[in-house]
Image 1 (cartoon, one colour):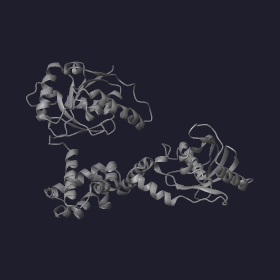
Image 2: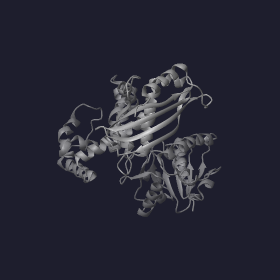
Image 3: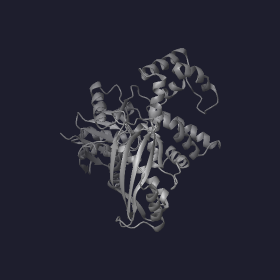
Image 4: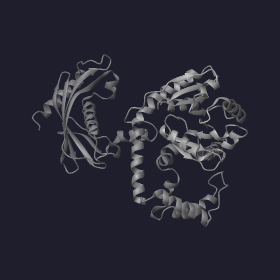
Length: 470
């Protein structure tokens, strides 16, 4: 049976919640008096439809329906879940809850997107207090999984468990905040960083860009895959978290920050942090954690590399200085020299067959650059397209293995370019071969056409040089 969510407030956050529900097969009713709400939600939903499915290797459920309602009562009457995302004013939220109390189902969960108010503040004086709790998301809601689930003593265990199950079914991670506190957990960290950033700018220490670069090129990448405490556990070496605190704990009394109100590092607190860190690491040694960290960083930075953003842009710039320089008179042409990255391996522990295609595509690109069909050539509207490739898999490749690819031109005449590739392990063993057939095309018409004369001359020269090579 299809479930129904009601979205009260259709701004950036409300629109993100709507997208998360709809793309997971829920029907959604929307109430927002803003006449622009429909347009704004359509814009958020368009981005979500593009992005969220790309996270998965299977299709998402059939989309639910979206109904824009003229009244709050109409929106919530049949809702299993009500998500309130109205402005951060307690009087406005209380007004919404008072009206909800007259129309919402007794078994509906009412989540608030508030980033600062405690659930007891939201529930105050409300007949439906037991149904209201904080479910604070992070933008974009349709991609980031964290939801701070903050109940109060007014919410019973079964309601909390039901909320956790529903949020989990949407692909979200409900972090159960066991004690109420202003701004919950995550925003308190963000607020501390934000405040320190403001001081650094005011005091002329750093610009906004320099602060952002400090985060995205450094600890932001570590936090993204290990958080704060596990990162510091590794920094403590084989002795673990207690050693880290012993080394760096005294720094808390140094004037490194404007935020100097810190707890005393008593033996009790140090033991508590150490014990929790041990439990968090489980059976993983420091070396295991380092290996996991490194693999995660490689995968994330390579993803950024594909988007030419942040640390990935740095990698692309550096890589351009490292690319092998082949020459037409060298036989064979070494078109690839690289290490197999961890994100190229599959559940069998070896390189996925699709990545062989990637390597041979990169090898063909190297040949194209050699003959002058480079980025400028492509910008002028001409290129080579692969129309057929036959790959043989002779041995396994694993993450960390070094491989090279030698390439030869088998056919280079007119519009035709046929390449042969041999992939070699570090010891010279041939681990894979491929024959790749390309046709020269116009990028304007997307039809085949003759190469530019200088490019064709270089292709023909390579074909002649490689004639008879095995």
